[in-house]
Picture 1 (cartoon, one colour):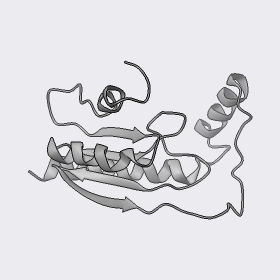
Picture 2 (tube, helix red, strand yellow):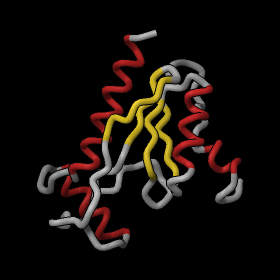
Picture 3 (cartoon, rainbow, N blue to C red):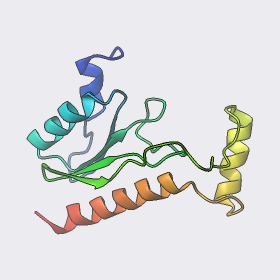
Picture 4 (cartoon, helix red, strand yellow):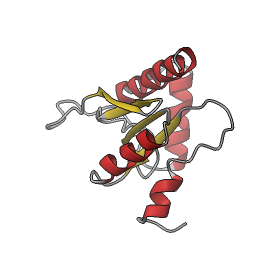
Length: 136
């Protein structure tokens, strides 16, 4: 699709499901947050929109970022971004596949805690899924 163009941004908002679904979408550049949220509102989507990490719609494990929930086309900010310098850096693996795989295994085994921003993102998705099922 190409990078950094409107087709790429629209692709991030696509819902491949025929039935009810929650899209987890992301933007790389802050100026896209407004247009992507407006698109989700216009299409009456159910979605969680956040600034992506490495281009993926996953919370940054180092810092809590702003997240917007769109419920049946109505947007509301559900998470404020944590700004300023980090006082404590999370214990994350070095950026290589083997270390990352080992770290993930440690998290799954309960030996290492899941980073708080990821826990918060999952909580927002679960809440959004619940309200999507229970409201018209």
